[in-house]
Length: 566
Ligand code: FES
Image (tube, rainbow, N blue to C red):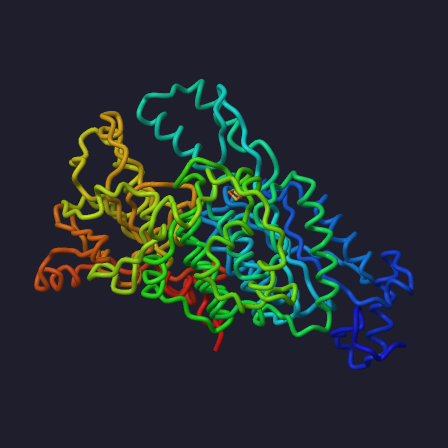
């Protein structure tokens, strides 16, 4: 029996007799039909997230075959294993609650099972950060393969893509401009192929961030899910995983202060999802890298928006790929990036960009630096007494006429309260008011859902009102738009001032000053503090209990405290 701890001889099950353990493992492995020759090879694990509850990963069986082909051709044995999979629209109360569970599953299964390197197959919003968090903590050589975006559908000659167009049509339906028959037809044409949402939502943003971090193959973030190039990328990723065996290129060699800052630059230049701030903070937190919101603001002031995709622009991810994709974008940003950041191929980012052929670039989708879509980055962090630990505004998707504004607060105390009253014809609300949602943050029962895109009350929507300032401790889908202040930290349920806002209070937003303030005097706030609602009770058992006890705020990436790097 081989003594070399490689392949399935790695990390033996402990029966108190190492030779017996190996003999038994080989015996069980042989029951799956493997030959001695195959069992002598190093093993590439493949963290597989195909699931009947994850439409975005519908093509993963075919993608898995391509990864395996790449691994086998490069001389190792591919072994796939299932982990938790998070399909954005199929989880209650919200997928974010289970991101840390998936990261723990990934970390522990990568560490506990006999593999020499691992391919992480992810795609839908939370799956990419969960896998990267887990892989960073596991410390094994790892490379990611993202599933790629959906193609667009068609409705009455118009292109449709999940999920910016989902929201646009829903707003029209609420305003009475689209009838039931048409919304039913739209429903069937928003998401028509395998793959992740077709716009620059959270999944696409995280794919671009993964490429900026250097943890996926160059040029692969934007390849559509159903494109043959996606299968070739899968095969090449399998081959790379074999080359990683025994190398020092573990995820922390790639994910560090420099690559995280490159990822922030990319996030800003693509007008990416606000969710990515939370995820990048959590991924960085596993590697001991702090993502500072002050630094985000500095970078935002010096990073132009260059990518013209919905929700901030017009195009879809398939257009971004055809336009030149991440290579073209990174070349535009070259002087702003840390070019000495290492990537998973063993090349630095600078070497990658110098070595790539400069292809044609569609300037209607990827603007040149000289003519940016916006001179400043898409996201900005706000502070002030309402959010001493920060809040986020996606200014590239907001109405700039609302950036300097003082208004009367109209408060909804919970998601249930919002649902019950927002369309009440008697709701006391005017266009100039500021809508506030409380108790939708990470410490609330609802676990920070994408509910920050508060619907415009029906009585205003039917009058043509399309945007208002909205403030909450919730998140917002990367596909949404509006003047929406999110991630208010600390959140209401963990004692934040947000929980003390009352109807009629004045709130002041100043994007210029990077502030969001509640204009209520200290004596009144002290009085209200005495009557503050009790925090939600800790659930008695299970993952919900672990979540309630360990969840951190948005400024810590909503990771569990005990999982962060020490
Ligand atoms: Fe999976 Fe949008 S639902 S990426």
